[in-house]
Length: 414
Ligand SMILES: Cc1cc2nc3c(=O)[nH]c(=O)nc-3n(C[C@H](O)[C@H](O)[C@H](O)COP(=O)(O)OP(=O)(O)OC[C@H]3O[C@@H](n4cnc5c(N)ncnc54)[C@H](O)[C@@H]3O)c2cc1C
Image 1 (cartoon, protein in one colour):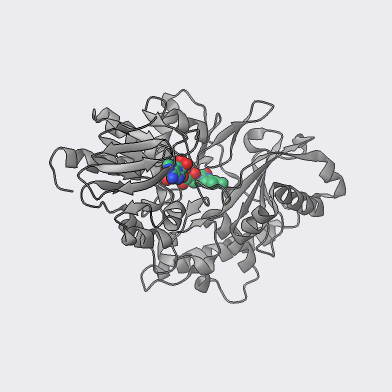
Image 2 (cartoon, rainbow, N blue to C red):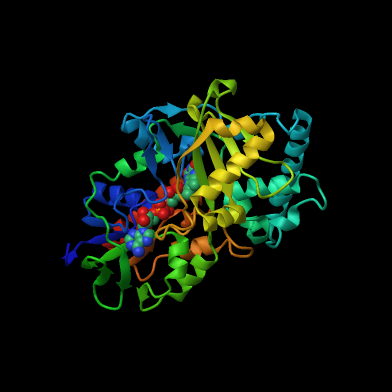
């Protein structure tokens, strides 16, 4: 590609960009998805291991599955939907964490969530202020918070946390959520390996400068991760400081998965969880035998994941082995091997895993989503008030931005 033109440029080919592209195509609008990576999907990414199992390195759960628009897409692609209840809805393996302690912990967690709901009716605060003082379960509550939000509660807006809308139905796609999302873009016109460097909206047509040339367009839908927008304040000419500010209020938290192979897996029930420890924040959650496979999916979040990322991939494996050995005995080390992982924080086109709002910044989601001059539209999970941090939040905001573009092209005011 050198120079080219389109009616609508879609910047970023993740869940939001693909959903926007499908909606525009369905309306007969010419569009082009411009994607920096050599693949579609963004933070949705499935890889296949040596045994042929699909491993989701990014999104894996169809959250709010029975209202999740990706469900229909997956079914339309002939995928297999697994509705086994997720491990976090069942008792944890009672190793180093008795059932009585788990019961206590659940009560403490419920109390925290109730305080968040109440706090949502008053002025915003950091979610950490809603932890019960000196409660013995606070560290584990914070650790679980780092898996959910990718950050510690000191940094998280209680309002935003309370706004998250989840109906508790969580399913999976056996062949991969990431594979489903990427394949949904198969019929779209796409420029891959094509990072956008500047979006010049000073002239009559938009000029989108990329690594492979300039693309001109009537409108653009920008779906870049909030962390990428936050660090590229010169992306827009003229500058759009209100967008940079909004994106800075919505950092990407960090969550990383490490997949391990597991020998003699039958010793454990399928789809069961084990915490590495229940008295510290720097611990991983281990999902044993996902889909019944002879594997472990280890989940790391927040500043603990960031510290391990800084040391390299091996550090995740060594940490997981050290926790598993302390719970299951030293011989366990010989039963696990690393298969795959991805460091989302080090990924230049993500810079993290999913967005959270800083205290007092929950409204940044609406500010980020607001269109500019009827020509620049915004989508991506961070733009969703209630479905943020998810792939279906990406879809919903992508479709919403596409509908706004279609309305503008029909001469309507948005
Ligand atoms: C470990 C992990 C676990 C997760 N688990 C779940 C889960 O179970 N369920 C769930 O629903 N969600 C989950 N998520 C979150 C989910 O993956 C994301 O919310 C969703 O995929 C985001 O979609 P998006 O389109 O908003 O952004 P992205 O997928 O990030 O899309 C943005 C696109 O922009 C591209 N881009 C970046 N810079 C440029 C540039 N300069 N020029 C052009 N293109 C550029 C990127 O490459 C990317 O393709 C998880 C994420 C991670 C990392």
